[in-house]
Length: 591
Ligand code: ADP
Ligand code: MG
Image (cartoon, rainbow, N blue to C red; front, side, top):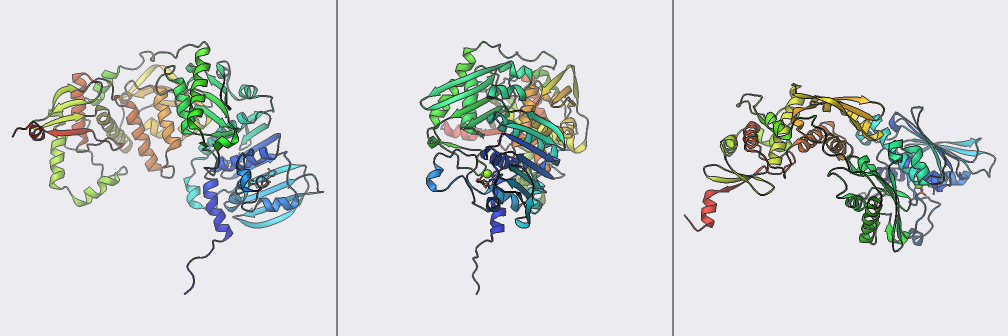
């Protein structure tokens, strides 16, 4: 019998590795630009077409490679940056694994043109899906051009998972901005489909770079941060709180020159801003942490976006104290209070929304059918309605007949039926009701009650956020928003659905964008849609801590009857916890 185990062929290994190193066009750009930076380039041009799916071209004026090195560079684990294990401690170059070029070449049509100026001609090599197609000499000056065409042409699954070209381009633009911040002495140009998007000359320092990258109102409100603890140093800039954004993407952090997105750092920044900021708002911050290379492990993640600190507490304190010191030391105006009463009051909105079932009571929403079928209930529908389900259903229908005893201090409602004490999470309950209504709107295209704003609200986004939102504008409009694109990155909201209540628009859209950009369900549009509706419902629902007036509670109970037997919120948390009287009596030692 032939052996079952065979050594994977090199090409297959490269394709597997590619999955870790490159997951989207932006990660290709990252690897290639980092190579240019490692090669001491002082000018880097980035061109992409169709969100990088069709073409990514990076041109640099760095050291270039000799003829022999050019071939070596395309092999896996070929690197000029690391010779032995001990070099792993204290890495100062961006790359070091020696797998980027080989991995990218395995999943695209890659053309490398390079010259180190020592030979009469440069070298051009074309690799397609990991297979060498062409190698010849070209005339060119010192430097390197890498062209990546048809990314993932041979990995259809991954290609399918890519987002719309505009969104992929947004990721790339965000990345180039971060790299430009980290390397002010390098000139960058960035073009999308021949349109110049970023053009920033070489400058002396980060502040000058910020001036060429950000709008004037941001520049005018920056506060310098400088703080050190032991050998750890924090420097950078934060914007005064009024220039806050609605999600964490506005926080750009770098560790020893590497752009990272790290939980610990993010929570430290948020902490530093605590009490100076409304909840749900995040600072605009550009922060550089410098620590001795042996105090940080950058080798935990192939894309090197995550890091591990030897002394996490030290880094945490460094950031919290540094940011806090900068903010409190500088005069600033507090964020504006709640928005002007353009919107109807929260109480009125809850009531109005919860008022009347839009459908006859017996036309219960059946989640087991239609495009929004939920997996967990799908099984139930094929089994038919079981007696116990019927009982639960009956019980659920009686929400409106429950007695209201009050609420726990600062949280849940306390209700009762004839035989149970019932504690209800009113946030979860409202969330469920809103979610069901949103689903129905999407499914039936039915009209949503809209509140026109007297003064339209302009929402500002980063380029990436703006594009991501543009892609999902249909869903947002279908949910009752009157929203239009306004300038390059802004949107203007002229009307909001009544169900939104008085939820803060910035916070609401910030949360939505987080769902669009960060959920793991990127591949499945239907699932993403569900996540978005859940996010909307969650943001608009009454907060767990807000008290409800008796008539609101009534309205909520009536609305819950409509939802039928579903006693969990869209995120799966229970809406009610029941304490049967007989159990209470038993605990009391009574029969
Ligand atoms: P790594 O960057 O981890 O070393 P890569 O696969 O990205 O691995 O690159 C392999 C090698 O190719 C690098 O170590 C470097 O010597 C060379 N190289 C890649 N890109 C460039 C470039 N733009 N200019 C000069 N040399 C480059
Ligand atoms: Mg590299």
